[in-house]
Length: 190
Image (tube, rainbow, N blue to C red; front, side):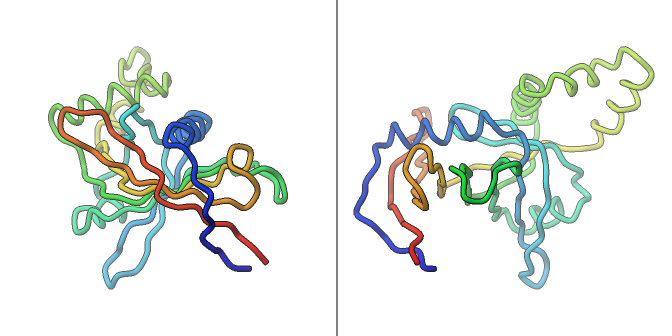
């Protein structure tokens, strides 16, 4: 099997709707960082996101991927439902960009977005019960990370057709809305 470029173009709005739907329907991601010796390292985390395609996750800064991101902000992430069945109409994203630990107001924004998506997190951080206070103490030792994808590869067979991969660029401008633009279409063929 090979992947070949095809002439099919999709509207930027259709691409944005597909990305939004996949993000909304999923809460876990897998992310790859660059380890010493240029080796890949993968980790799984819960994520949240903003309408401007800023993704956040909470993790231990002393973890392997946390240390990797301190050295190199390069990150690749996949988001998909693991319950999909081979041969079905699959959906998923591959995102490529940079990721850094948040601090100050950025950390406050990340926490607000994360708590809005994950109500147990918000409840634990209020720490009403002894168990919640213990969980909150552990979570306070973690840090939020901010991932800014610059390129996204989309597999949304219900939206774009079977074995079609749509690539989009994410363009960010200061004080302007984030723009997602179609950049290519590929088809998996025998």
